[in-house]
Each structure stands twice: as C-alpha cells, then as structure tokens.
Image 1 (tube, rainbow, N blue to C red):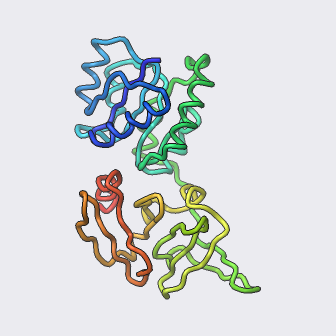
Image 2 (spheres, rainbow, N blue to C red; image 1 turned 90 degrees about the vertical axis):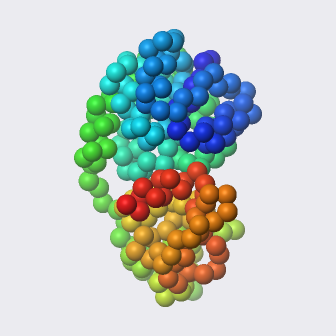
Length: 251
C-alpha cells in the first residue's frame, strides 16, 4: 500500500507519519504545498491512500485537483469547519480532526482497508466540496442545553456557556455565572451541535466561546493560553497543532 501525506505543518506531518508507522503503515512521501503536490502527482504514480489537510501554505488543497485528476482514496486530517466536513464525510473514507487521536487514526486506516476493493466508488466531487466551503449549507445549531441539578432540570443557553470541557469522563458546561454543569453528552457529540463561528475546539479537552475570551497569551512550545471571563478552574491551552487554525478562526 502506497501512502502519502499532504500537510503544510512539518511537525504535524512527522507526527502523523510516526503514528502510521506504529500501525504498520509506511508513508512514502510527505508533501507540504499545493504547488509541490501538483508537481509530484504529474511526475509520479498516484498512491493508494492520501492523508490530506485542507488548508495548505499556498492555498486550499482542492486546487490540486483542479490541475490533476487524482483517484486515490482520501482521509482528511484537518481542523477545518466541521459543518463543511459533515456535508461530504460520507463520500470520503474518513476525516480526522486535529490534534489527531491515535485510536481514531487506527479506526480510519482499518476502514480504508475494509473499503479498499471499492475504492473506485469513493471518488470525491471536489467541485461540490468547494461550493460547500464557499457557500456552506445553512443548518440549525443547538441554542440550549439541559443539566440535572438535584431533582431539577437546568436550562442553559448556549450563549451563556464560556466553555465546554471534559473531566473524569464527564462533559461540563462552564457558564458566565461561574457555575459548572454536568451534561449528558460528550465533546465528540458537541462537534455537530455547536455553531462553529462561535465555538472552537482548542484541544481534546476544551471548546471555547469566542464571546467570552478575555485574553490570549503566548505559552510554551508555540502554544497559546486562553483566559475566559469567569472560568478559572483549569488552564485552557490551545494545542500546538490547533494554533494556526485557532488564529484563522479568530479572524
């Protein structure tokens, strides 16, 4: 099986390569830009599987497919807006949200191996995908959540939530009044329920609400620390793999 990685952040590309090697999958080539990828595809036999980031240093990776017809199976490795990804997820092998979880990576590779004989049917319509990114399908996101407080149900408006976080296998909503409420859900389920313009997953542990960010501070290892208006229980650190996308989200 011939595998390539297209990822503009070289540390992220090396980390993905190491994780794949632990699964017995050897990466043949690592590419880092649209231009480099186009040149490579024009001069080499196409791989069986591509691990593809969407935003590269010189443009969107879909621009590669404007020039070169690529029929390889694709697994997205991206932090791009979840609502766009969901729109075409069923047409790809899978997508992995950064920072990549090793268990999710293993599942995605296993899925590819299962679907490999049918790979001809997995070609993506990149024109449709680009249209979705420019004009994403409008959808409704959750405006309210409920939490049990004793024998009562507490209604929590989404705009009152400073952050969602996981702790001891539970998922909590930290609100503007300094309270923390245990929810009957997971951060993974919240991916499809939160408005991506308002909430961003800064790490495996935290989603933050842009309206309640008080300060952003440089942190060790090229990371960022977020200060919220009321939540002070734990440090909120933007993981290194997500810093670039976090900055884009802020804009």
